[in-house]
Amino acid sequence: MNKEEKLHLINEIFTPSAPIENINLFSGRDIQLKSIKETILEKGQHAVMYGNRGVGKTSLSNMVSFMFEDIITIKVTCNRNDDFKTIWERALKKVKFGYPIKQVGYKAEEKMEVFPIQVPDLEQISPTEIENTLFNINENMVFIFDEFDIIKNPKIKAQMADIIKLLSDNLPFITIILVGIAESVEDLFGQHPSVERCIKQIELPLMGNKEAKKILNRNLKLLSLKIDDEISEKIIELSSGFPNYVHLLCKYSSEKAVSENKTKINIEHFNYAVKRSIDNSDHSIKKSYSIATKSSTKTNRFANVLLACALANTDEYNSFSSVEVIEKYNKITGELNKTESLNYNLGMLCKKERAEILSKEGKQKSRYKFRKPLLKAFIKLKQHDFTVK
Ligand SMILES: Nc1ncnc2c1ncn2[C@@H]1O[C@H](COP(=O)(O)OP(=O)(O)O)[C@@H](O)[C@H]1O
Ligand SMILES: [Mg+2]
Image (cartoon, rainbow, N blue to C red; front, top):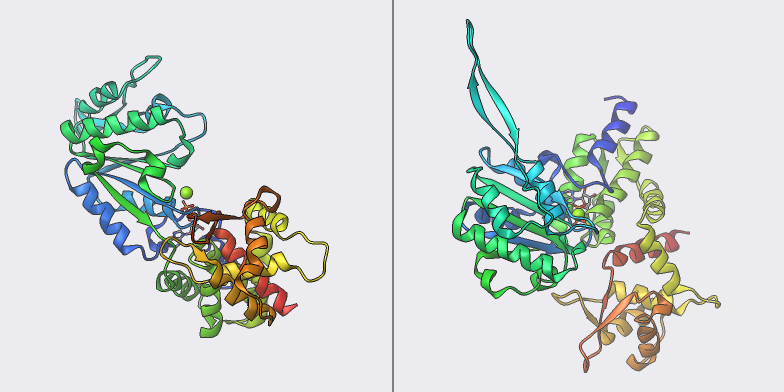
């Protein structure tokens, strides 16, 4: 592979701003892939897949179409103006079913004639009408509704629950998978006791180090690029479980190495990649950070408090206590502060003036959480960049 080809390949395999579509570039997530397979195979079972922004929900749902040869997969991305009717209209328009028609004459070949599904031409469509439409198709199908978190109207959620119930009871070979940013199923879908039994909850947590490392190792191998263990571990650590940061850091490190005709990524390439990854982070992340840390003094207390938050040990719900924060804060600054001394800063970081970067969990115990968990990775990148300056 020459240099041009390598640079081209880098852009094909490291896709920080696009979900994975190619199964060969998809890493890890074995447990969740298995859960989805089981859901599809179990008659009358449906699923809600939820997790943070950027953990890989869309990528995972793109893998569904590779799972079974004889199952049609239809994916719809919900948008702000959608209602029950428009969501299903878009879904049904994508269903094309065909049956063979005999040609007359010599060398008659069987041809498929393809028909789009007729969507009922009504002002409102009810769950029963959708059921009736699907009844005529009689095929194994999976409908995926991505970015379902954008649907706020409880009526639409209730209609979705109704259609799930109807399909479970009457058309068990159809599976619905709702996908979106949320901390729980109720958060995404509301509470619908009548369908709880037929919905599998699939949480997509942050990526584990092993999974993240798979992305890095496999893709660098494709480029015949080497990397020191120390640097690859640093990439995994700074990425904080967010695969898009693995992609960002690997993309820019590789680009730099290849453009210098090197076959190994070195620390300078990595430091350059950190800078580029900061620049290329989401606008909303950069903005929140700058509001939260604005300061008129040289020693920026808020920036250090945030760094301490990003480094603090978290529980399974990604929350951390003020005790953990002070411990890290003292380590960073070399000071000996008491826990209470950061209460003001932590409190302020929950307020609008500081971009509501944190939220407080629970009343009595002071536990906090990043509202946008991607910030954790961003803050660590900033810190790394600061230390190499
Ligand atoms: N399993 C995976 N293997 C490799 N890269 C992944 C994987 N999951 C996600 N990514 C990458 O992470 C980023 C975010 O993925 P995406 O599916 O868009 O997340 P979400 O839909 O949860 O916001 C993208 O750059 C994507 O290429
Ligand atoms: Mg997505």
